[in-house]
Image (tube, rainbow, N blue to C red; front, side, top):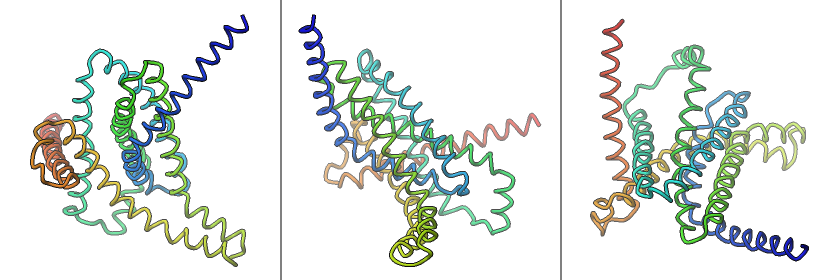
Length: 291
């Protein structure tokens, strides 16, 4: 009886050791996409009132956990019964990310900047609606990025047993969510940490100087994240296109990979933006006709 229990414990220990090794490899493979995930979601989690930052971030984090709970079992099932579907899901997700990135660029280049009173009026009228829309957009983007993280993690353990696949992908999914949104929380609360240091030190000494630096650094970090997040969206979507569409993969082999990825993302994003614009115009006309 005792020997049987020890044998089971030994098997569990061996399984956990295999999972630890596989998880380390999978995390290393997904490091790039995790960095992109951080940049994208940090940019999306900023721009709120200080009192709303943590509630908004918590809402996005809960959405991210739900995304993983949906994606992980579906990815495992599809990989077992219909693996080709994963490829097309990734490509569709790539179009969404490319659309988000290109839409940001088009908005920056061609939309008229609003004056102060217009911004205030918009915030008053659309405060809660705008917040909910931004949360929804962040969770949707997280879903697409989570699909790629899970697929890449699964790809590192395809030759392993099903228990190792399940545990490894689950561990990577949890690390991705906690790690990314933990760092995002630190970023969006930089100014509060700075003010706290200034207050505790009576605005004297190294702590006060460090606090002032954090306060001054936050706007620069947020602006940088806006740019980095947009580039990350294009790079991730472009990599999805290049690695999953054979024509693009073999096209212009002498062209640097990053240039090919960005170009593919911009073209895909413009196509998606065009379709969305036409769709809005058609539905807009229909709505006016019913009015």
